[in-house]
Length: 283
Image 1 (cartoon, one colour):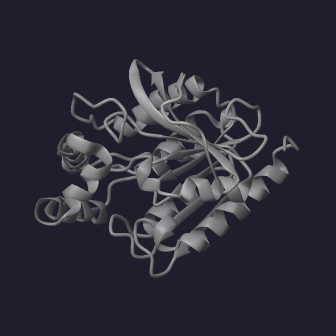
Image 2: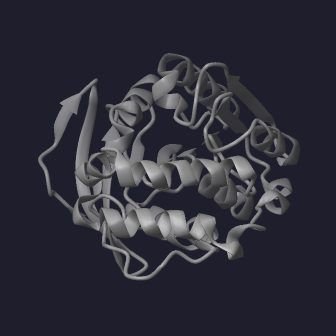
């Protein structure tokens, strides 16, 4: 791990540090958020934030800091390959890209950072990755918070992606994304949209893995999610084998941690307190 690309700063009683690491032969950009007395390499739970399909560290804005402050837990946020300031992607996304991120790349990132007990907080693609990881590594997953997850391909998702593709062509969306991803923005956007719209991806589903998810789960979705119907939330809650809580938010679309920030932050913090109380007194 190479630390020190930016000096430490203090905000909201947390220490924040950006650093680079190598995982699976790729250069990854990451950030730690440490409340007083905590460390990524401790044995206690660590929040691990997993961004959306077009996301990055910076697109979370201040939400990871707010949740780390509210929960008192250290947090790790990172850019997946091809996103933000991580290494550029040189090949198209395969239909198995979510499984690869969950079962190969995420374990490599956690190992590089010394995170032993991840409490995963994922949004959209990141929520799916969190669910897949928790199902594959149940003993090593403290809990999963899945915000706007997709566990199979439904028409609403494809319609939403077609709308986003059109917006990328005719609205300022491309320039807004460029502010986070730089000159790689076109490669990132087209890799994401093309794999989702490809015939090979139409039958993709991870619902068969959900019965292996035994850790505590909080699943959150907006009623007006432009990429999904509430059937996604129901599939997650019905499929998971562990104790699962669901939150369906009215008047909320695909990004609940912005569109219903206070409610989502409170729900996540309350869920984490419950998890910690049952975790065995490690904190």
